[in-house]
Length: 143
Image (cartoon, rainbow, N blue to C red; front, side, top):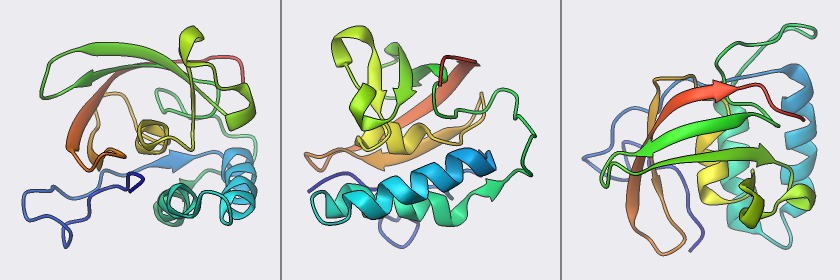
């Protein structure tokens, strides 16, 4: 099963989902991506669509600070292991894990989109394990 974010009704230990914010441009492009991926990656597309549904969308031209958006370089911590990672969030065609470029259609990519520095989220891996991560720092990247 492809990962999805844990909702309170799915798991009693899950916390409320953190607020997420997106630019109008990211929201529009990600909506198109989720729709296009629905046939070949239905669960990943559904997880992304769920995130899009709960996002606060900024007015065109407004750029959020310290919020994970497409092209952002994100430093985050696995709250169980304490391990930190730095990844750049990209569209599937630009993904290259060897270069630290992760697709927004991966479980961790979908978990990260729209989070602020300091926010935490619980999500489920493709293998079914629950994970929790905390965003440490967001740096503006190349979209």
